Image (tube, helix red, strand yellow):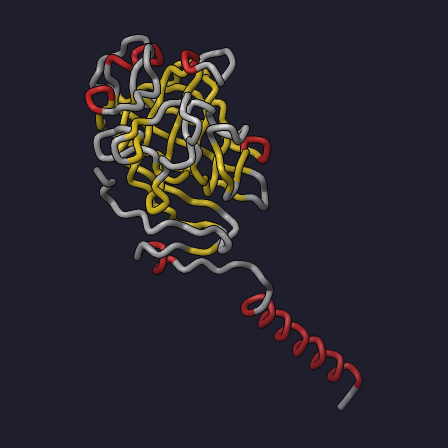
Amino acid sequence: MKTGQILLLTLAVAAAGLAAWLFLGSGWPRGDAGNASGGVIVEAPQWRIDAGTPLLVGDLKDPFAYAGGDATRLLEGSARLGFDPEVASGNLRASIALDGSVAVLADSIDPSSMLELDGELTARNIAAIDQMIHGETGLGDPNLPEARAILAGTADLAISIDGTPRGVTYRGAWSVAEALRRGDGAIRNQGLIYSPLLRDNTVFADASRLELTLLVYRSGPAAQSDSVILHVVYGDVQVLAAPEDIEIPPNPATPEG
């Protein structure tokens, strides 16, 4: 065989080997759309979380409404959170139907309208991954009891009404964490209603469920409860993709009590 033919044959074999390596062994993650659509978590570096059934908590005078009841109410809306650590980029989008309690954000727009909040996420927005937040942890909001968060952070949230930007941005804090709200909207351990004055704030989280909590603040220290102008808890959380080392609760659809 001539030298030129040997060289061409060698190059052809090398090209075939490179193609096989790229397809089978390059190390790039290959998603399984069947698993995702079937409700099974896809283990990936990226986070993809959807949530629904928003519970509007309290009002401007009592934005945490620990006792729940009539101070909390279910509205229409949804939330979607995505973050890719490899490129340090993501997005948080949330919506909630308007009512009187959110008029401060919407300039008293028609209550049939939908309030939309949109925030871009970078590495600096991620405050906690698989960590305890709230309470005295220094993460989350000190007005809430401690809970384990699979992901939590902050965002600058742009406000839109029915898709029309309002030209206003608010400070926000969000978390996907062990559920704090019970079926009646209260934060309680059996008959004990939570209060920030309690010495032990570690017994109120439900480790079997996740909630996506969104707090929107006016300017001022986050530690002051009167700086909260919107408090929404999305109870129907679906973790569509998460890193493999994160333990995801079974997340039953209905909270206890």
